[in-house]
Image 1 (cartoon, rainbow, N blue to C red):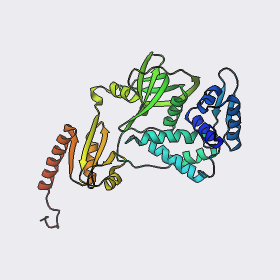
Image 2 (cartoon, rainbow, N blue to C red):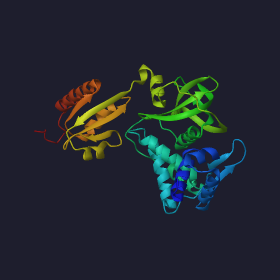
Image 3 (tube, rainbow, N blue to C red):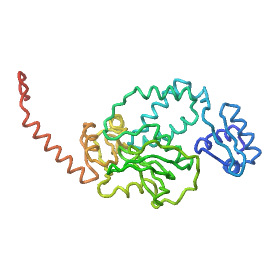
Image 4 (cartoon, rainbow, N blue to C red):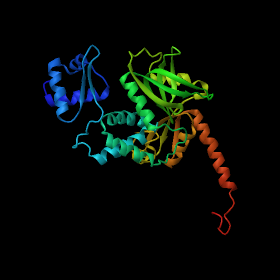
Amino acid sequence: MADTGSRTLRLLSLMQSRRHWSGAELAARLGVSVRTLRRDVERLREIGYPVEAQPGVDGGYRLARGAVLPPLVLDDDEAVALTVGLQSAAQSAVAGMGEASLRALTKVVQVLPARLRRRADALRAVTTTAAWATGPTVDPGVLTTVAHACRDTERLTFGYTDSAGVHSDRLVEPVALVALGRRWYLVAYDTARGAWRSFRLDRLADPTTTGVRFAPRQLPAEDAEAFVRAGMGPRGRWYAVEVRIAAPAGPVRERIGAWATVEDDGEHACRIRMAADDLSWPALAIGVVGAECTVVSRPELRDLLGEWGRRFSRAAEDAAPTAGMPAAT
């Protein structure tokens, strides 16, 4: 890569994507010699990123905590606002928002100075976010700790309470975080049980990294999401729904963009797609839009809307006029 500035940015991006890199790996990814890599690392240090060098067979480079965010990118107040916002968004598991927010949060927290982390934690501690969806919540600190362990291929310990209320201590090799519906799952290899497992993060306590790295194993599924879905069984049935809405995509996206994927389907229509473990959520989203619609899939959603429609019609017919108010005509 001939452009030194571009190569430096590429080096920074690589170091933010993984906790530890060997010098040979980094040099190969950048297409430069190890000597040129050392100069590029020094350049990063000069602009405020504390890159640590570790000698020895297992040595290499890593981006240390406490780096100052470049002032032309974010000032202190913006950095705090971004961190708090990402922590809130990371707890939303709809339309891919949670996963994208968590990836961004992992990068920001890695280089956020301690004084700004304290400000962000204090603000988050006294802030309550109202949400449409109900269900178990996950502490952002748990999310980021587990995400770092997955990214750095570092063994992780935690306490876990299963669906039967039985508590156990686990030592695992974490591979991926999966957001499904309103829940987060960790996919990991349980070293004591010698088997792959998925863990709900709202049932996980005190995750702690061990500092011991591992070589990733082959996951017995197409990907982490498929592994989690397969382990849900009949009680964890998942619905992928598609509905055509007789309204432009723009207004529909403003109403339910965080719940579903909204795509144009002609000048005056659009299609929404979403996945849910409870069909009440897509039914509610359709009702919020307030426009004519056609259920493309699934039949179960069509049946549910029919049931709701009949129930609401009966409620409207049976409603008595409020005292002192004329009946509707």
